[in-house]
Image 1 (cartoon, rainbow, N blue to C red):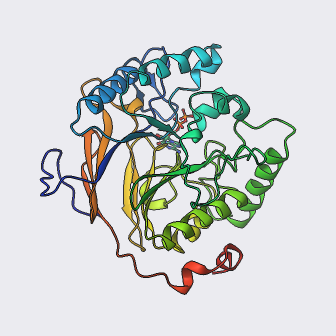
Image 2: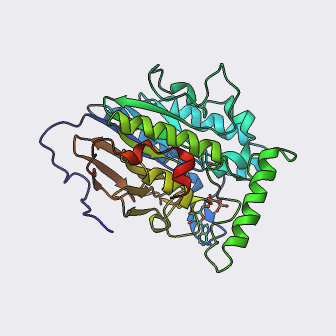
Length: 354
Ligand SMILES: Nc1ncnc2c1ncn2[C@@H]1O[C@H](COP(=O)(O)OP(=O)(O)O)[C@@H](O)[C@H]1O
């Protein structure tokens, strides 16, 4: 279902937004010449850092300033690993991000995991899970230091009254960044094998190693967070690297177990939209439940005279994405939130069978 698109600057509003945030995807920085990808699409390595700098400059100048920026993953390219420059490249982009007056929340994409093992990433500034909500009455925190370290990198925070942002790890189920002899790698390989057997008729082109998914523990955690948000009448924005709806992307970039993820999300009323990157050509779809799936165009495939980022203004009844460059501006109307129904109270085990 396509919905009205407005060009930047046309979105006149009567009341100021409750808050705003920035969004950007797939910077894929590497100090190498521009060139064609294996898909024969031009990648502008010489411009991607400049594009990021320009986005930061614009967000720094916005009035009122955005509350935070969502960086949707693949901030450096896998090429850095091939020349032993992963850390150097990461330091370069982080130096630019330090110039931002607005705090960044980082998602991990496949290129983070080509460059680094997960244990290493946790020690870097790309791990922003310490910005998780400190609310004592909120849902259980994913990286609570008193508990065991979880395999997945996911957290949530409430930037304003009745809104919550949930950052998910779409490579929790996945083969990238895993230790060779790890249980998680074996479980992911087993999942792929089973899924390929169950999808023999060409519907499995997303079952490739540059995608991944949410494992059972993370799905259960997501379900808990969304149950809390339903009960507290919050509106939820979910953010991950990989698209989760087949109609919100143009290529095989899709989470392995997107049906399981959608099943959990659809069993709640609170979710307004899901922001992804990964498919550099971008995409948009409003699904059967009214959830907006926005796949951001990738910075790395943005020519020198354009860019790809946006600012989202959050109002009482809608969000307005003000796109820059290749990113279209969009009005994202909320679906109605009904009083808590019995559906919201189903356990995760029961929902799996719906
Ligand atoms: N089968 C395909 N045909 C065309 N483009 C593809 C295909 N598979 C992936 N892509 C493109 O690859 C990009 C995602 O790949 P990326 O994460 O950058 O890894 P890589 O650098 O290995 O291509 C997306 O822009 C997607 O459009």
